[in-house]
Length: 259
Ligand SMILES: [Zn+2]
Image (tube, rainbow, N blue to C red; front, side, top):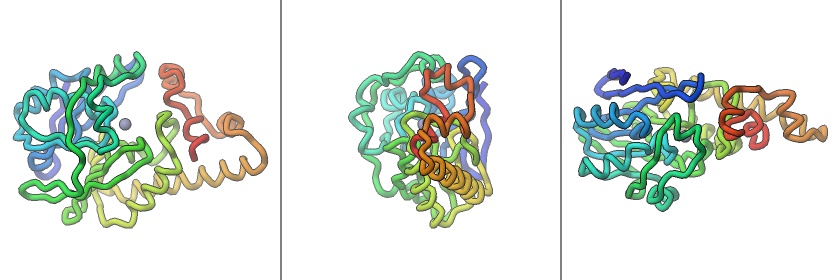
């Protein structure tokens, strides 16, 4: 069931997707005609029905994971609007998304689409977003920053203050560097693709950074004692259902080995 809410003049569509007993919420934002991400294809019907009620003039994808770009092909075919994506992901977007079955169950397919390279700034009638290169969760990942409003659309950079597992493509050292860079900007509210609108967003993001740096310190000490990342994970990591469901694509080991 699509839940539609508003934050100020931003329209928000929220859906919940499942694989086994794992559920994940997905938030898609329409800010003054700029659609930030398109949601997963497994919920194509509800999202595309919602798109039809929205005055969408352009689309910016935070990154090319299928829960964000799953309906980009529909948008390209049915709405005559540009879709912007990190230049590093453009050629991959032209191919069918290839990934394991559990992700097809949860997110559906990711059909090929043509996107335009992310410009440095994206303007709407009322707002002006600086597009920031924010690697970590994925090599090619963008956040969208509205300095006058103090808004930061963070894609999958935030998710929560405490990470138990991470995706195999993630690099925690890069995430730490990226968040450190973002903390120099002035913003209050973050718009997360899976946690929604967070009004004290800078504080929360700072908390995530501190937690990661604390863990980094612990891991470095343990490595210095000669422990392997597997041994460190056995001590500091977590066993989660999603690790076996995903065949290891999501694990705490992925955090330990990249932090
Ligand atoms: Zn992602």
